[in-house]
Length: 85
Image (tube, rainbow, N blue to C red; front, side):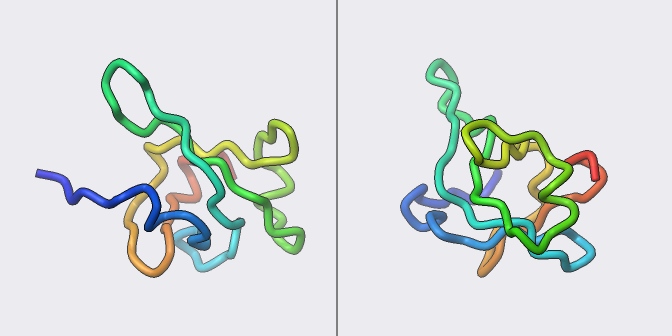
């Protein structure tokens, strides 16, 4: 069974790729209303990140598919291959 995290605890967490690159800061989530599952993380991009510059943006925010999340702790760790970088 997966670990449950309160969405409020995720706000402001830094998104880091699995090779240590700081990609951005989490600001919001897109949740499937029917299932209640997180689909997309929305993040403010790190202006110093080459990966963030290549990622899809909407209204200036990065759209990170939830399937790219490897772990959540002090940081949100992302699989760099899964985010298309």
